[in-house]
Length: 202
Image 1 (spheres, rainbow, N blue to C red):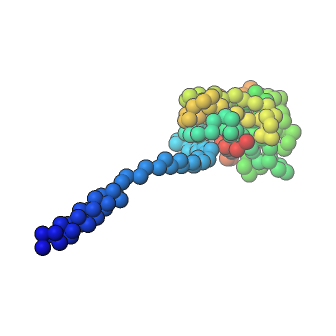
Image 2: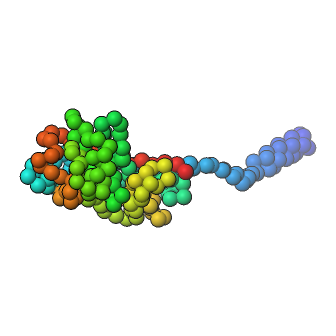
Image 3: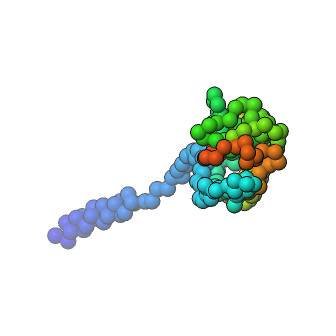
């Protein structure tokens, strides 16, 4: 009986021993590769339009629009462009002059192409279109006014210079450019200029 008990316990002990060995830890390195795409976002955070113009002088209180820009692609992967347009008799043209001035055109009786060309340079005879100086407040970005830049024409190019975010404030002066506003020539009504802030992947 004693011998039979020992013979019975030995296999149980061995079984427990072997069972404990079967639970050994295993460790493997896992490498996960993922692609994060380049992206950029833009939001308009405030604007001060519209305003009323003094009919005697063309002066108004000033206009401004503030944009917030974010990007993980920077200047290497995106163009950040502020362009503009006005509607004229027979079409649509850029609203920026070669010096960065912004033109406003009568919405009911739009100006001719010749009047717009004169307003862009400050030459008289520019009925129903007048211009104001513009500027871009930096807000961490680097704006540059460009003439006939790439496919955008006259525009502001915005550079982040390594930043991932910044603000861009497009400002329009309240005093018209010389020889562009004439009370006796420019008709009463609504004058409009549209600016577009676009982000284009390179």
